[in-house]
Image 1 (tube, helix red, strand yellow):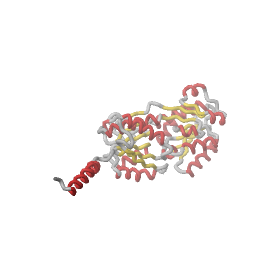
Image 2 (cartoon, rainbow, N blue to C red; image 1 turned 120 degrees about the vertical axis):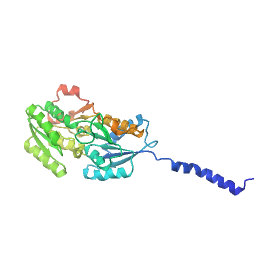
Image 3 (cartoon, rainbow, N blue to C red; image 1 turned 180 degrees about the vertical axis):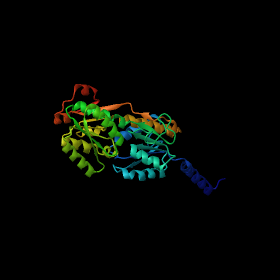
Length: 322
């Protein structure tokens, strides 16, 4: 007959057994996210990323977890944040934008990195080719440098009498060359203004007034991407027709925005993240190119600026803000 003490010991061991087994189970994979902006600005992007992951059978809190790091517009923080994610041993690292992707690439050569960039991933050194990336990076490109001239053309179409145009950049040599070529073709005088701080931005807008520029194209540098509402309010206050990549810019008073469909781009990143969690290698996943671009026009701003939006643009617009 089993003694009472032995019986209690056996019960205790049986109760503890599931806990021991659970302790030995591998932790859920971590999906790292390195953003140059703020959680508020990228809430829709993260939601689209979740959607892509769910299409691959991954659900946050069930079979994977997010690990977020935000630079809040301070690019000098990115290298440290990237290293921190590597120390956390994330399974895959999503880097939103070129500066975050560069920081992630410098931090690890083994952890899979998924980038979302407006530049050419080959020229940036992220991949050896779009079809066969090789290495530990792949992702989505909107080729914003390539569509920079298109933004100028759209601005010229909505403000055809403006002959002096400014281009606001942070680090935009390639973009400046592309847009300058387009400006010459359209017979426009283009001035390149540089800004990487609030002081620079004040000077750039002061120069914009001195030039009496009839339009402004804003580059898709991370510094500007982190403050679309501020830029939208500023161009409205200065009463200058302007175009940027972000819908938030148009919603805040900017005249127009034109750029890739970010929700679709992040959904694609989510799908790739899921495939990598299943064991695929980033070097075998071709870089995807954004094929959907959105044109958004703020009609209230157009009216305030005395700008008549051509019917051709009204019919092509994906959204009209009134």
